[in-house]
Image: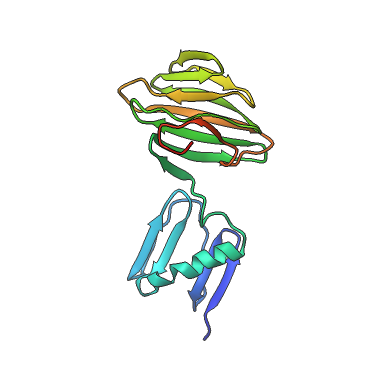
Length: 186
């Protein structure tokens, strides 16, 4: 019997010799299988025979050949100031949950192709929006227009949580013009 290697919707099979039925929405239960590695992240789930763990590169190569972004772009991204989680993406919008460490500040930046709406969920944020600096508290929001120099800072002692809604014609992370960066990337 020969191994199959194919791609069905959101599922990639590699070196599977018998019929495999697989459908995932979220909860995954495994019954009657031994010596498995199961890795569940916000991006994907990997289920592998322990003896095939070294073949993960083959899955990555297949993702690349299918022009999938999952091998290089992750939903949750850690930065020196905290992290963000891209919780929804559409053609002209992206929604991120941003967590900023106490006392941390994001870079002073601007974008050519997107505007941003920030809604504070927990804590207070010190916002630089053009030449204005002001505080935004829980259950309040602010708007950053396209092309506006801006930054945000957590002046508090607890992690700041906010929801960022980006809108515009291009939403890639390379549409960041760094003006001032406390982390040596400007």
